[in-house]
Length: 312
Image 1 (cartoon, rainbow, N blue to C red):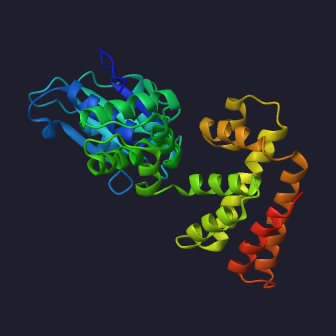
Image 2 (cartoon, rainbow, N blue to C red):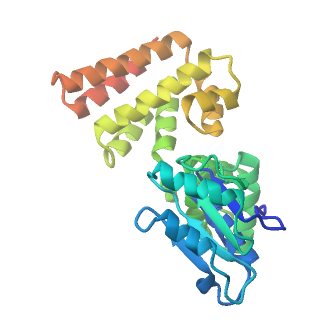
Image 3 (cartoon, one colour):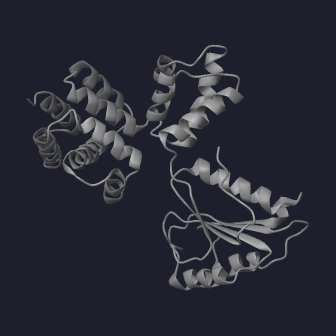
């Protein structure tokens, strides 16, 4: 795993990105870098429940106790007043040299704060592959290349989920190499992955597999939620099919991760643009039938799947 913190330490960091495993890694590195054996006395945490700009800045201005620096962590805030934002932005222009303020800020409340920015976005396939192999090795286990690919996709590139599944797989496999079949049998798939698999089955007209995947989703999700997931997925495929934008530009436009666009572009090859447009219209019609009471939600979602399978 790459290191996020380099010396000399900055006194203010803004941490962004959706992978909370990496965010935890950043916070661990900051704790180590601040030093001191009695580290708990030199750490303060603020979130929605206890946030006060004045108290936070008081903590930043306290002298550390038997340590090089004091660490103050501001976790993700759902809302913050303009007055409090201004106080923290002003502090960042001339921060205490004896503390490190780490702000987790995916809600973009503190984009004007001065200091270092650490991006904890999801790792790409190659980075995850290296991490997973090293993690399995540290547990005295290994995984096949097919199994590795299946693990990454089943967990939708989410490192927190991947780490939890690695420990389970390594324990199960023992001295054997973890195979793709092991991952299929043991790893709980994310909703995004199951939708991707369902779309793949629909594109290949594999009706038995499609119905099996739909029933699997219905066991844990409301039909209207499945409809919403399908709507988002097929809109993404349609944009990927017709757009001339780069993967990065399209990901920003759609508000999704780059790997999701890469996968969408690959799967969109299995559909014509005309059929993708028809599928989106079918989804809208299905939504109308449910909301107007013409068909109950579970029957409607089955009707949708069979309608897609019948497209020429």
